Length: 85
Image 1 (cartoon, rainbow, N blue to C red):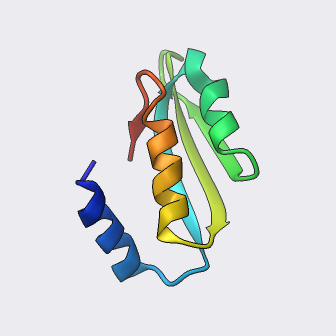
Image 2 (cartoon, helix red, strand yellow):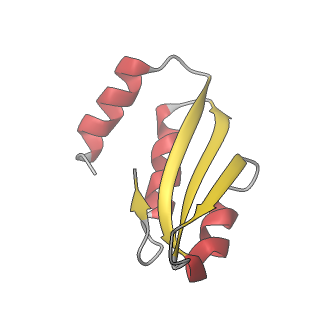
């Protein structure tokens, strides 16, 4: 991911809060529940990879600030094997 300050600046440049924000992740299938806990309350859609080892997760939620978004990405980054898009 882009360094945190740059990412924060980009979010603030392109969004006006509050707004609906879309998160996208690829997560190992066996780590799905860990990501779902972080994304509780989000509108989530999922798609299995061809072999079923990974899951593409897209979530949308109204967010109030840049810091809320960064916090979710930070928590998700703690999940082994997760890729934030």
